[in-house]
Length: 286
Image (cartoon, rainbow, N blue to C red; front, top):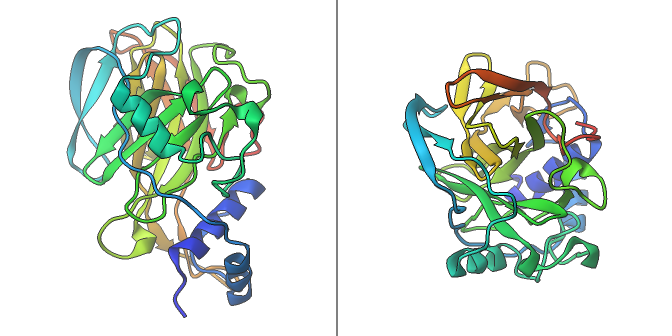
């Protein structure tokens, strides 16, 4: 029996919780799959995310993983406080969190009141490509990732800024804080196991104007930088295991990434290397 997207997502979530360096399986033992089906929680629909407010001072053209031309946005200095949502952005946040707030885990109906409500969250940065979009949506305490999908979307799982309660929006040293490296599902044409993206997002200091992501050796992309926040995503490839044994025959390739920040002149101001999949900011087991 073919493995459904829901089963694959359960295995992805299990991988993320274990936070090891092993690859993400999309095919595993049938017994695990059947168990995952029994544990699967209900999920909810989400719609498109509006772009975060922010001015663009300049632009350069780069090539993304899919070889299409993208524009690297060079941002103005960030505002001192979280931006206000426009009515359209507030609606998009509400659609991302239809139960009234973020999720504790992959169950979209499991909430913690300490994480706040829709009214606490703002659109901070959004990356769009030919396949859709992913947005970083945050409050003073923490953030979620929102990836609209025609099918079952990924729940808006809450993470405290710094991966530690009560969360500190401005609490990072240096020029860069990589706050999340995750895999999200999007609904598109073709086989379901091809409809995944790798997402990296976080915060930067006030004098940072450009953020680049090295997804793998020789494959670099510019993130969208808005108001002191950044986000980027790229298609996630599935590859065959060289020696599957009792493990998966194929898996979603999610190698470590390197994130680099630059000033207005393009000079390197800081860098975080070897950020592994499952990373959730300082203290992450990823």
